[in-house]
Amino acid sequence: MNIFICKIKPVVYQLFIAIAVLVGSVFFACSQGKEKVHVLLVTGGHLYDEEGFNRMLSQMPITYDHVEHPNAYAAMKDGQIDKYDAVLLYDMPADIPEEARRDFIAMLDKGKGLVVLHHAFCSYDVWPEYVKIAGGRYHHFEWEKDGVTHPHSRFKQDVTFVVNVADNSHPVTKDVSSFQITDETYSGTEILETSHPLLSTDEPSSNSLVGWTNTYLNARVVTFTLGHDNRAWEHPAYQKILSQAILWVSE
Image (cartoon, rainbow, N blue to C red; front, side, top):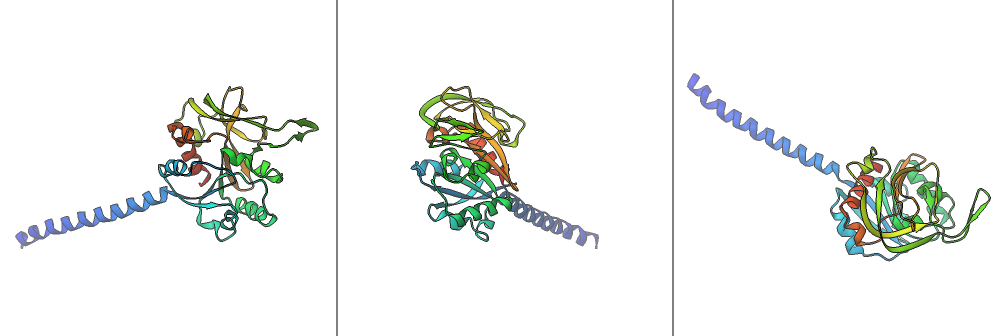
């Protein structure tokens, strides 16, 4: 009888281990899947190297659907936007239809995270609310604030400069140190005082802030003015802050 039990025990033990490994593997696969947030990428209104940009995104812990204007607004409607964890704007339209404005605000009111990237900061000249959403604006025209008239914003391409981390305790800039990058700079832009600084620079052709967070209704928003082309996209520090920004706004 004891001999029979001894023969059975190894079989039962091996079966137990096999089941444990299988369950562990399934759990690991599921947990890995949860780490990949699903992103809505919105483009249109500005040319860019789509292949290079997509190559950068493919190295991040995300999945994404790509929509281009004028079809992008349909994806932001209630019921459609619910399948996404965050929205990544890399577009530059000048205006937005009234219905799309309402959908955009409703999306943020539901807490959908938003990342405004580079030339998306220059969008919607005739929509005042976008300043409050992005935490600022690149002005294509002369603009006024607090009774003071300012000239239009400016850009400069192919600038090599140092980006400093303004808040190294924030999840978006975690484990990131100051880095040198070659990119397009923006100057003479509007940045709201309520925006929380993440990245800064002393480059004269740029506004001092090149990255910040903002809160609009129930949504987390991160805006980066960096990211014109492959020289930025291929930079490890840039990839890291963008990846961490997407993950943070999606929480």
